[in-house]
Image (cartoon, rainbow, N blue to C red; front, side):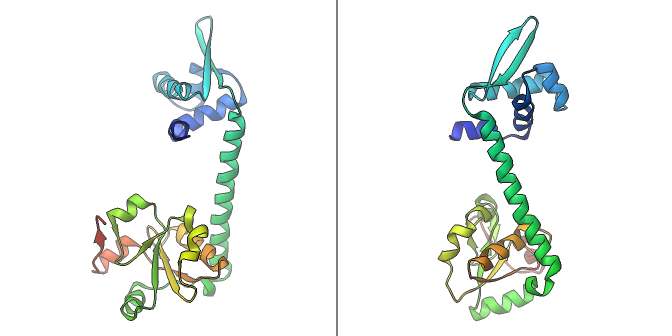
Length: 208
C-alpha cells in the first residue's frame, strides 16, 4: 500500500493517471495534455508502471499507456470522492464563519496568553506532524485535521479548546472548530498561528 501511495503521491503522476483512466494514450499525447516535457512524462510513467498502476505496449513507433490490472479506475474515483468530501467540509466551515460570525469569534493571542496563565485552555495544533515538530505554541497538542474527529474524545469534556493552524487565513482552523463542536467540545479558533505568535514576541517550543 505504501509503495502504491508513493507512486500516486505526486501531482504529475496523478495528472497522467487522470488521462489514462479515460483512454489509452501515447507518451507524447500525455505530455501534451499535462503540459510536461516528453522526458518528464516518461519518467513519471515509468514510476507508475513499476507500481503496477499503468501498463505499456508498443504500436509502431509509439508507446501507449493504459491502466494496469485491477480496480485502478475505482481508486482514482475514490480519491475524487475523498477530495470532494474534504472540500465540502472546508466550504461548510467557511460558510459557518460567514453566516454565524459571532459563533466563530476568534481568540486573540493576548487573550490566549491570559487563558494559558490561568490554565483554562487546551491548545490544539491541527497542522501535519512534521510542521508541529519544527515549532509550535507552548503546551500545544498536535492533532492533525484527518485525525481530529476520532481523537476529539481525548480532550477533556469540560475543556475549552483553542485551535490553530498556519495563520489567520488558514481555513483548516475553522474546520477544526466545526469538527470539535460537532463532537460536543467547546472550541474557538485562534486569531493567528505560529508566525503571529512569534511576531508578538512570545516563545515557541522548537524541535520537539
